[in-house]
Length: 416
Ligand SMILES: *Cc1c(COP(=O)(O)O)cnc(C)c1O
Image 1: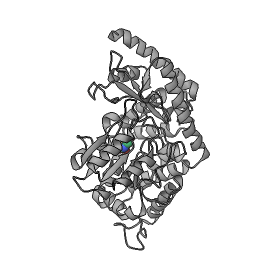
Image 2: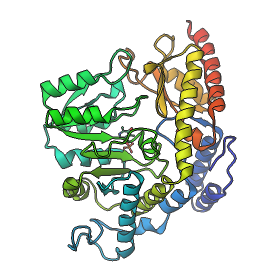
Image 3: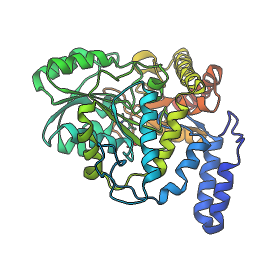
């Protein structure tokens, strides 16, 4: 994959788009352009990463040709659970993948490796323990939650009755509010996990509240799963009833989802994924997930995850020194939000201007944002992708100074 300067020691990507170009100059050409964009840009999108060539190769393998609706034969004590023949090897692969993920998180939870994405994983996870109209207590999109945590434009907000807990005036999850709302709304499920939250989540406190009020406790660790795997964030295993994740964010694997659950929920989870939510599993992606799980157990991965957090602290620290406001005043993980509410331009303006300058990030609402979601008063940054490319603390400090220069120009231009 690319190093810090955009040099690629393998020829894997180049050979692939050159090969595709022979059949489709348009598609091959666009992949080439995107490859060059990725190579030349500084990637700060907190949900992105670069997976290994081994993961890419697994995802581009002959497994893409195989239908295997159902679950590995013998998963449920010998009963026939695949709907197609020829599944001997994908059965072995899928079980291997499940076992590897249990090892990553040192758990005996049931694992389903079939969800096509994090959203699909959440769709199935809810279905396995809730009925339409049941109540979910979660964090809203505006405060750093995910669309699938009950946004009104998402299935979650339409199928379920969703109540949101708030963050306090410092941007931290307000555990008092979680408890208060659990008490008054009696949710069927309490959800912890976020897409734009820079602090450690106290899963134990969430579990205690869920227990006190008889709710299921679910964790969506899509963003932090790589940190959990490496011991850089407390683990929800043993505390949550159901855990969902993506595999392509800090875990650095293929684009996809996973569900973990207490053993007694195994059948419910499996039937919620197939046949309820999905058809044939993507066995090629499952192969990529298995490679990712092996990688996540290496010492190299642990070093990467540790460096992600060190880099993120240095990055936030430099912004603070440069006079920026950071939501919660810092970070414990791989991500943080820069608060632009005192500036005369929006998150969208900064995102666009940085795009022109080879720096990629995304606009993001900040808690209590007064600007509309298409503009926002914040941007979200993450350190995982550039850490994969070898960036250290000083590199991130430099990027912060470059962004500060651009912001200064924009302040003048937009009339501060
Ligand atoms: C990214 C994310 C998801 C969804 O992942 P997709 O693969 O994009 O569907 C779900 N939950 C959280 C908290 C996320 O950050």
